[in-house]
Length: 360
Ligand SMILES: *Cc1c(COP(=O)(O)O)cnc(C)c1O
Image (cartoon, rainbow, N blue to C red):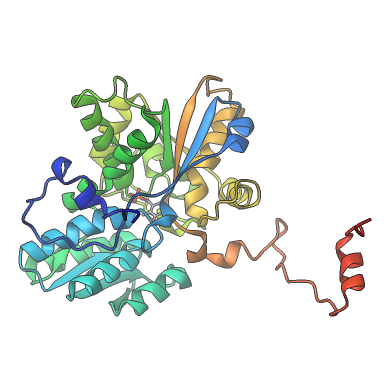
Protein backbone atom coordinates (compact mmCIF):
# COMPACT_ATOMS: atom_id res chain seq x y z
CA UNK A 1 0.00 0.00 0.00
CA UNK A 2 1.31 3.47 -0.88
CA UNK A 3 2.25 5.49 2.18
CA UNK A 4 0.36 8.70 2.84
CA UNK A 5 2.15 11.98 3.60
CA UNK A 6 1.62 12.47 7.35
CA UNK A 7 1.66 16.28 7.65
CA UNK A 8 4.62 18.51 8.44
CA UNK A 9 4.88 17.77 12.18
CA UNK A 10 5.14 14.00 11.77
CA UNK A 11 7.38 14.28 8.70
CA UNK A 12 9.84 16.74 10.28
CA UNK A 13 9.38 16.06 14.03
CA UNK A 14 13.13 15.93 14.69
CA UNK A 15 13.62 19.41 13.20
CA UNK A 16 10.67 21.20 14.83
CA UNK A 17 10.34 22.88 18.20
CA UNK A 18 7.65 20.56 19.58
CA UNK A 19 7.59 17.68 22.09
CA UNK A 20 7.44 14.21 20.60
CA UNK A 21 4.63 13.40 23.02
CA UNK A 22 2.60 16.55 22.19
CA UNK A 23 -0.85 16.19 20.62
CA UNK A 24 -0.72 16.71 16.83
CA UNK A 25 -3.60 18.45 15.08
CA UNK A 26 -3.07 17.80 11.38
CA UNK A 27 -5.03 17.82 8.14
CA UNK A 28 -2.12 16.39 6.14
CA UNK A 29 -0.58 19.78 5.26
CA UNK A 30 2.71 20.11 3.36
CA UNK A 31 4.15 17.70 0.83
CA UNK A 32 3.02 20.14 -1.86
CA UNK A 33 4.12 19.77 -5.50
CA UNK A 34 7.25 21.45 -6.81
CA UNK A 35 6.17 21.95 -10.41
CA UNK A 36 8.92 22.26 -13.02
CA UNK A 37 8.07 25.26 -15.24
CA UNK A 38 10.33 25.49 -18.33
CA UNK A 39 7.87 28.00 -19.83
CA UNK A 40 8.75 30.40 -17.03
CA UNK A 41 12.49 29.72 -17.34
CA UNK A 42 12.18 30.77 -20.98
CA UNK A 43 10.10 33.85 -20.10
CA UNK A 44 12.67 34.98 -17.53
CA UNK A 45 15.72 33.91 -19.56
CA UNK A 46 17.09 31.72 -16.76
CA UNK A 47 18.23 28.10 -16.42
CA UNK A 48 15.45 26.48 -14.37
CA UNK A 49 12.24 27.52 -12.62
CA UNK A 50 10.04 25.54 -10.27
CA UNK A 51 6.79 26.58 -8.61
CA UNK A 52 6.20 25.48 -5.02
CA UNK A 53 2.43 25.15 -5.28
CA UNK A 54 1.16 25.94 -1.80
CA UNK A 55 -2.45 26.13 -2.94
CA UNK A 56 -2.36 22.32 -2.67
CA UNK A 57 -2.44 22.50 1.13
CA UNK A 58 -5.65 21.33 2.92
CA UNK A 59 -7.26 24.79 3.08
CA UNK A 60 -5.60 26.02 -0.11
CA UNK A 61 -2.70 28.11 1.20
CA UNK A 62 0.68 27.79 2.93
CA UNK A 63 -0.92 29.01 6.17
CA UNK A 64 -1.71 25.37 7.05
CA UNK A 65 1.98 24.57 7.64
CA UNK A 66 2.11 27.04 10.51
CA UNK A 67 -1.42 26.41 11.72
CA UNK A 68 -0.81 22.71 12.46
CA UNK A 69 2.00 23.82 14.80
CA UNK A 70 0.14 26.75 16.34
CA UNK A 71 -3.07 24.81 17.03
CA UNK A 72 -1.23 21.67 18.25
CA UNK A 73 0.68 23.81 20.74
CA UNK A 74 -2.45 25.71 21.73
CA UNK A 75 -4.03 22.35 22.59
CA UNK A 76 -0.92 21.32 24.56
CA UNK A 77 -1.33 24.53 26.58
CA UNK A 78 -4.97 23.70 27.26
CA UNK A 79 -6.46 26.38 25.02
CA UNK A 80 -10.18 26.10 24.30
CA UNK A 81 -10.27 28.88 21.70
CA UNK A 82 -7.97 30.43 19.09
CA UNK A 83 -8.13 33.90 17.57
CA UNK A 84 -6.57 35.54 14.53
CA UNK A 85 -6.75 38.67 12.43
CA UNK A 86 -6.90 37.77 8.79
CA UNK A 87 -7.12 38.95 5.21
CA UNK A 88 -8.76 35.53 4.62
CA UNK A 89 -6.34 32.63 4.42
CA UNK A 90 -5.23 32.64 8.04
CA UNK A 91 -8.87 32.57 9.14
CA UNK A 92 -9.72 29.74 6.73
CA UNK A 93 -6.81 27.76 8.12
CA UNK A 94 -7.38 28.60 11.80
CA UNK A 95 -11.07 27.69 11.48
CA UNK A 96 -10.30 24.33 9.87
CA UNK A 97 -7.61 23.31 12.39
CA UNK A 98 -9.78 24.48 15.32
CA UNK A 99 -12.63 22.37 13.93
CA UNK A 100 -10.30 19.37 13.73
CA UNK A 101 -9.14 20.01 17.30
CA UNK A 102 -12.71 20.48 18.56
CA UNK A 103 -12.14 23.99 19.89
CA UNK A 104 -13.59 27.39 19.09
CA UNK A 105 -12.12 29.79 16.55
CA UNK A 106 -12.59 33.54 16.40
CA UNK A 107 -11.58 35.43 13.27
CA UNK A 108 -11.32 39.19 12.90
CA UNK A 109 -11.60 40.34 9.30
CA UNK A 110 -11.28 43.82 7.84
CA UNK A 111 -14.56 45.26 6.59
CA UNK A 112 -15.38 44.37 2.99
CA UNK A 113 -11.89 43.18 2.06
CA UNK A 114 -12.09 39.41 2.24
CA UNK A 115 -12.80 37.24 -0.80
CA UNK A 116 -15.99 35.17 -0.89
CA UNK A 117 -14.08 31.88 -1.17
CA UNK A 118 -12.14 32.54 2.02
CA UNK A 119 -15.19 33.80 3.88
CA UNK A 120 -17.03 30.62 2.84
CA UNK A 121 -14.21 28.53 4.32
CA UNK A 122 -14.37 30.31 7.69
CA UNK A 123 -18.16 29.90 7.76
CA UNK A 124 -17.94 26.24 6.70
CA UNK A 125 -15.56 25.50 9.58
CA UNK A 126 -17.92 27.35 11.97
CA UNK A 127 -15.62 30.18 13.00
CA UNK A 128 -17.02 33.10 14.99
CA UNK A 129 -16.50 35.76 12.36
CA UNK A 130 -16.30 39.40 13.35
CA UNK A 131 -15.97 42.12 10.76
CA UNK A 132 -13.96 44.90 12.34
CA UNK A 133 -14.42 48.53 11.37
CA UNK A 134 -10.82 48.97 10.30
CA UNK A 135 -8.12 47.40 8.12
CA UNK A 136 -6.01 44.27 8.69
CA UNK A 137 -3.50 46.10 10.83
CA UNK A 138 -6.31 47.27 13.16
CA UNK A 139 -7.61 43.68 13.36
CA UNK A 140 -4.18 42.43 14.44
CA UNK A 141 -3.91 45.01 17.22
CA UNK A 142 -7.34 43.93 18.50
CA UNK A 143 -6.48 40.19 18.27
CA UNK A 144 -3.27 40.75 20.23
CA UNK A 145 -5.09 42.76 22.88
CA UNK A 146 -7.78 40.06 23.34
CA UNK A 147 -5.24 37.21 23.49
CA UNK A 148 -3.14 39.02 26.09
CA UNK A 149 -6.07 39.74 28.37
CA UNK A 150 -8.59 36.93 27.79
CA UNK A 151 -8.63 33.13 27.51
CA UNK A 152 -8.02 32.91 23.79
CA UNK A 153 -4.81 31.79 22.02
CA UNK A 154 -3.35 33.97 19.23
CA UNK A 155 -2.49 32.10 16.01
CA UNK A 156 -1.31 34.96 13.80
CA UNK A 157 2.23 34.77 12.47
CA UNK A 158 3.45 36.95 15.39
CA UNK A 159 3.12 33.58 17.18
CA UNK A 160 6.55 31.97 16.54
CA UNK A 161 4.95 28.51 16.22
CA UNK A 162 3.51 29.64 12.87
CA UNK A 163 6.93 30.43 11.36
CA UNK A 164 8.35 27.24 12.87
CA UNK A 165 5.80 25.20 10.92
CA UNK A 166 6.14 27.28 7.76
CA UNK A 167 9.91 26.72 7.59
CA UNK A 168 9.19 23.12 6.50
CA UNK A 169 8.57 24.41 2.97
CA UNK A 170 12.34 25.05 2.66
CA UNK A 171 13.03 21.49 3.82
CA UNK A 172 10.69 20.15 1.14
CA UNK A 173 12.33 22.23 -1.60
CA UNK A 174 15.71 20.82 -0.60
CA UNK A 175 14.36 17.27 -0.24
CA UNK A 176 12.79 17.46 -3.72
CA UNK A 177 15.70 19.09 -5.58
CA UNK A 178 18.66 17.78 -3.61
CA UNK A 179 20.06 21.33 -3.56
CA UNK A 180 18.94 24.85 -2.71
CA UNK A 181 17.95 27.18 -5.56
CA UNK A 182 20.01 30.31 -6.32
CA UNK A 183 16.92 32.45 -5.77
CA UNK A 184 13.75 31.86 -3.79
CA UNK A 185 10.96 34.25 -4.69
CA UNK A 186 7.60 35.02 -3.06
CA UNK A 187 4.96 37.63 -2.30
CA UNK A 188 5.40 39.56 0.95
CA UNK A 189 2.61 40.81 3.22
CA UNK A 190 3.35 40.40 6.92
CA UNK A 191 6.63 38.79 5.81
CA UNK A 192 6.06 35.77 8.04
CA UNK A 193 6.51 33.37 5.14
CA UNK A 194 9.60 35.16 3.84
CA UNK A 195 11.10 34.93 7.35
CA UNK A 196 10.07 31.29 7.74
CA UNK A 197 11.75 30.19 4.49
CA UNK A 198 14.89 31.94 5.68
CA UNK A 199 14.72 30.07 8.99
CA UNK A 200 14.41 26.79 7.11
CA UNK A 201 17.31 27.48 4.74
CA UNK A 202 19.49 28.74 7.59
CA UNK A 203 18.94 25.45 9.45
CA UNK A 204 19.75 23.47 6.29
CA UNK A 205 22.99 25.43 6.05
CA UNK A 206 23.78 24.99 9.76
CA UNK A 207 23.25 21.24 9.46
CA UNK A 208 25.58 21.03 6.47
CA UNK A 209 22.98 20.18 3.81
CA UNK A 210 23.54 23.34 1.75
CA UNK A 211 26.51 25.65 1.34
CA UNK A 212 24.91 28.89 0.18
CA UNK A 213 21.58 30.38 1.15
CA UNK A 214 19.21 31.19 -1.72
CA UNK A 215 18.92 34.92 -2.34
CA UNK A 216 15.40 35.67 -1.20
CA UNK A 217 13.46 38.05 -3.44
CA UNK A 218 10.30 39.41 -1.85
CA UNK A 219 7.72 41.39 -3.81
CA UNK A 220 5.00 43.68 -2.52
CA UNK A 221 2.15 45.35 -4.36
CA UNK A 222 2.96 48.95 -5.24
CA UNK A 223 0.09 50.31 -3.11
CA UNK A 224 1.06 48.19 -0.11
CA UNK A 225 4.84 48.29 -0.03
CA UNK A 226 6.10 49.32 3.42
CA UNK A 227 9.43 47.51 2.98
CA UNK A 228 10.23 49.58 -0.08
CA UNK A 229 9.01 52.80 1.56
CA UNK A 230 11.11 51.93 4.60
CA UNK A 231 8.24 52.56 7.02
CA UNK A 232 4.67 51.35 7.72
CA UNK A 233 1.92 52.55 5.33
CA UNK A 234 -1.34 53.85 6.79
CA UNK A 235 -3.79 52.90 4.03
CA UNK A 236 -2.49 50.01 1.93
CA UNK A 237 -4.37 49.44 -1.33
CA UNK A 238 -4.09 46.57 -3.83
CA UNK A 239 -6.32 44.03 -5.54
CA UNK A 240 -3.99 41.40 -4.02
CA UNK A 241 -5.94 41.19 -0.75
CA UNK A 242 -3.66 38.61 0.91
CA UNK A 243 -0.75 41.09 0.87
CA UNK A 244 -2.76 44.24 1.55
CA UNK A 245 -0.68 44.92 4.68
CA UNK A 246 0.69 48.27 5.78
CA UNK A 247 2.53 47.33 8.96
CA UNK A 248 4.26 43.94 8.53
CA UNK A 249 4.33 41.90 11.74
CA UNK A 250 7.69 40.24 10.91
CA UNK A 251 9.51 43.45 9.94
CA UNK A 252 12.80 42.85 11.77
CA UNK A 253 13.02 39.15 10.89
CA UNK A 254 12.42 39.91 7.23
CA UNK A 255 15.02 42.67 7.10
CA UNK A 256 17.58 40.29 8.55
CA UNK A 257 16.56 37.53 6.10
CA UNK A 258 17.00 39.91 3.20
CA UNK A 259 20.43 41.07 4.32
CA UNK A 260 21.87 37.69 5.28
CA UNK A 261 20.55 35.93 2.15
CA UNK A 262 21.71 38.71 -0.17
CA UNK A 263 18.12 39.20 -1.24
CA UNK A 264 15.99 42.15 -2.28
CA UNK A 265 12.53 43.62 -1.84
CA UNK A 266 10.76 45.37 -4.69
CA UNK A 267 7.28 46.26 -5.90
CA UNK A 268 5.00 45.27 -8.75
CA UNK A 269 1.84 47.01 -9.92
CA UNK A 270 -1.62 45.47 -9.68
CA UNK A 271 -1.61 45.29 -13.51
CA UNK A 272 1.62 43.27 -13.45
CA UNK A 273 0.17 40.96 -10.79
CA UNK A 274 -2.99 40.36 -12.83
CA UNK A 275 -1.00 39.76 -16.02
CA UNK A 276 1.08 37.07 -14.29
CA UNK A 277 -2.00 35.61 -12.59
CA UNK A 278 -3.45 34.98 -16.05
CA UNK A 279 -0.12 33.79 -17.50
CA UNK A 280 0.35 31.17 -14.78
CA UNK A 281 -3.09 29.66 -15.38
CA UNK A 282 -3.01 30.06 -19.20
CA UNK A 283 0.53 28.90 -19.91
CA UNK A 284 1.76 26.91 -16.90
CA UNK A 285 -1.48 25.22 -15.82
CA UNK A 286 -1.25 26.49 -12.25
CA UNK A 287 -4.26 28.46 -11.00
CA UNK A 288 -3.43 30.77 -8.11
CA UNK A 289 -5.13 33.68 -6.39
CA UNK A 290 -3.87 37.08 -7.63
CA UNK A 291 -1.69 37.74 -4.55
CA UNK A 292 0.13 34.49 -5.22
CA UNK A 293 1.28 35.67 -8.67
CA UNK A 294 3.20 38.57 -7.11
CA UNK A 295 6.52 36.71 -6.82
CA UNK A 296 6.52 35.60 -10.45
CA UNK A 297 5.40 39.09 -11.53
CA UNK A 298 8.35 40.57 -9.68
CA UNK A 299 10.70 38.09 -11.29
CA UNK A 300 9.52 39.17 -14.74
CA UNK A 301 10.27 42.76 -13.76
CA UNK A 302 13.77 41.73 -12.63
CA UNK A 303 14.29 39.75 -15.86
CA UNK A 304 13.37 42.82 -17.95
CA UNK A 305 15.86 44.88 -15.92
CA UNK A 306 18.57 42.30 -16.71
CA UNK A 307 19.00 41.44 -13.05
CA UNK A 308 18.82 37.62 -13.39
CA UNK A 309 21.86 35.57 -14.45
CA UNK A 310 21.16 33.06 -17.26
CA UNK A 311 22.52 30.26 -15.07
CA UNK A 312 20.00 30.93 -12.28
CA UNK A 313 17.92 28.13 -10.77
CA UNK A 314 14.86 29.63 -9.17
CA UNK A 315 12.01 28.46 -6.95
CA UNK A 316 8.91 30.63 -6.78
CA UNK A 317 6.39 30.03 -4.02
CA UNK A 318 2.83 30.46 -5.25
CA UNK A 319 1.03 30.89 -1.98
CA UNK A 320 -2.70 30.23 -2.43
CA UNK A 321 -5.23 28.49 -4.67
CA UNK A 322 -7.02 30.26 -7.52
CA UNK A 323 -10.46 29.06 -6.40
CA UNK A 324 -10.26 31.35 -3.38
CA UNK A 325 -10.72 34.48 -5.48
CA UNK A 326 -12.33 33.60 -8.80
CA UNK A 327 -13.51 37.11 -9.74
CA UNK A 328 -10.32 38.02 -11.60
CA UNK A 329 -10.21 34.78 -13.56
CA UNK A 330 -13.76 35.36 -14.82
CA UNK A 331 -12.69 38.53 -16.64
CA UNK A 332 -10.62 38.83 -19.82
CA UNK A 333 -7.59 41.12 -20.20
CA UNK A 334 -9.92 44.06 -20.99
CA UNK A 335 -11.94 43.52 -17.83
CA UNK A 336 -14.92 42.07 -19.70
CA UNK A 337 -16.74 39.14 -18.16
CA UNK A 338 -15.99 35.87 -19.96
CA UNK A 339 -19.08 33.77 -20.70
CA UNK A 340 -19.34 30.26 -22.17
CA UNK A 341 -20.47 30.25 -25.84
CA UNK A 342 -23.95 28.77 -26.36
CA UNK A 343 -24.28 26.01 -28.93
CA UNK A 344 -26.73 23.45 -30.35
CA UNK A 345 -26.64 19.67 -29.73
CA UNK A 346 -25.60 19.02 -33.34
CA UNK A 347 -22.05 17.63 -33.74
CA UNK A 348 -21.47 19.10 -37.23
CA UNK A 349 -22.54 22.55 -36.07
CA UNK A 350 -20.41 22.37 -32.93
CA UNK A 351 -17.40 21.14 -34.95
CA UNK A 352 -17.81 24.11 -37.28
CA UNK A 353 -18.08 26.49 -34.33
CA UNK A 354 -14.83 25.04 -32.93
CA UNK A 355 -13.08 25.02 -36.33
CA UNK A 356 -12.41 21.25 -36.04
CA UNK A 357 -11.27 19.32 -39.12
CA UNK A 358 -13.14 16.13 -40.00
CA UNK A 359 -11.16 12.84 -39.63
CA UNK A 360 -10.21 11.34 -43.01
C1 LIG B 1 -0.70 35.14 3.86
C2 LIG B 1 -0.50 35.18 2.39
C3 LIG B 1 0.54 35.90 1.79
C4 LIG B 1 1.48 36.75 2.56
O1 LIG B 1 2.29 36.03 3.45
P1 LIG B 1 3.01 36.80 4.65
O2 LIG B 1 3.57 35.72 5.48
O3 LIG B 1 1.97 37.61 5.33
O4 LIG B 1 4.04 37.68 4.01
C5 LIG B 1 0.67 35.83 0.42
N1 LIG B 1 -0.19 35.13 -0.33
C6 LIG B 1 -1.19 34.43 0.21
C7 LIG B 1 -2.11 33.68 -0.68
C8 LIG B 1 -1.39 34.43 1.59
O5 LIG B 1 -2.40 33.74 2.10
